[in-house]
Length: 99
Image 1 (cartoon, rainbow, N blue to C red):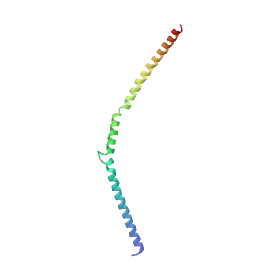
Image 2: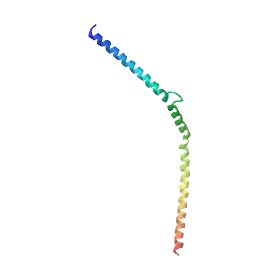
Image 3: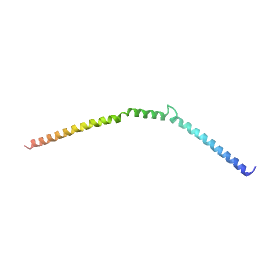
Image 4: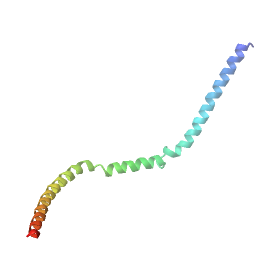
């Protein structure tokens, strides 16, 4: 056989060995990653379930915040009135002490 045939066969064997090694290592990596996220009892599935629960539990917040803001605006208005009353009271007490 000529040198060209030997080089071609060596190249084919090398490429086949490369692909076999690649397949073996990908299978080994997959086996290591399987417990992380491949099953319903995996860590990733538990995290996903927890995040979904948080999303469901906090889903009503955007609608309730507007109600809360309205209530806080009313409280702010009331506190402004209380502040004005306390300022008048303090001024009156100062005038009374000055007599």
